[in-house]
Amino acid sequence: MKTLGILLIANLLMISKLEARSTEWQLLPRQKSWEIFNIPYNTGVDALGFDKKSKITFHTKQERETKFITSSRFIKPLGILIGSKTPSNFLGLGDDVYIEAKNHKILTIQNSYAITKMPKRLNFKENDESAFAYPILGKVKILSKKDNIYAAQITSLLDTVKRGDTLLELPPSLKIVPPSVGKNNLTAEYISTKYPSKNPLAQYQEVFLNKGKEDLIEVGNLFHVFLYEDPSNEKTITSSDFIVQGSIQVIQVDEHTSLGMILKEKDPLKYTGKAILVTDASELKSDYTLSDHPIPDDDLDRLDNYDIHKKLGRTDREELKQLEKLDQPL
Image 1 (cartoon, helix red, strand yellow):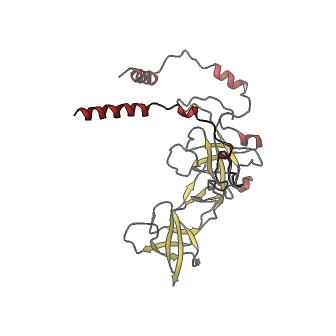
Image 2 (cartoon, helix red, strand yellow):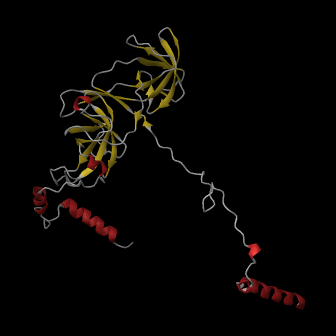
Image 3 (cartoon, one colour):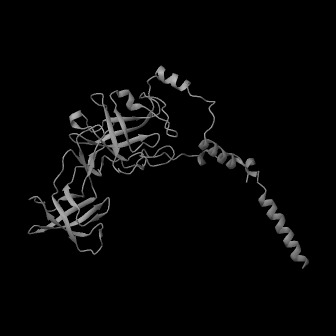
């Protein structure tokens, strides 16, 4: 028993010595010259030893698919989806469907077509003429034909597809181009593609514009949306175009209308409003907060006229009470 205690004490002393950091290496002589050598790197290896060919690349999209076909006139459908093998009311990706040609149209075997439905009729406040927007629900590929009935397969879905939906020519993919300036000064009216929904619009959502080829609008043209009212109380801040709230880039153009995409927005945009075509190339580099134009004197006077000593309203007092409650410790 005594021997076991001595061994235990010896082990503890040895462990304590091992845990202490050694300093003996500092007393060792320097290595001899033959022990010091460098291995030259290959020309394909950088100074840190990484292969120069091993790089991470990110795919950059050159094209994008549009979700709508805009037209200044009503487009007659090429065919109508009359049936399917599936018993479901809504058809899915890969389902076999049967299409009946309409308006004496002939569908091409192995070609793809856009599946759509009754168009949205666009009635802009400024335009007397109406335009039509056909939502693209998906794509269908024609496989074979018997009499006037075509067998096809759904190859892409963007929305629900059901029997009775129609076919149109598939529009070409939209090339992604850098923003460009317009040829003349004009103001357009925009409206959400999801109208009658009045939800605010965010980046990359699409809108309809009431300007088109006849107004010299081209793909890539940039429109600015300006802020005129305080979104909290709808009081007018300014009537001038100097607070840039967001920007819309044209991605598809028809005769009288065009389709735009919200390229950038500082705050969510209203579902409808006016947009002003950018004609100055220097504005393409804007940070989308305030433009470089000076604030007109009349706007400064209007800001000075705000009464900062005005008593709080009922709504303001209730909000203030809620904030005071949140500020109290739990």
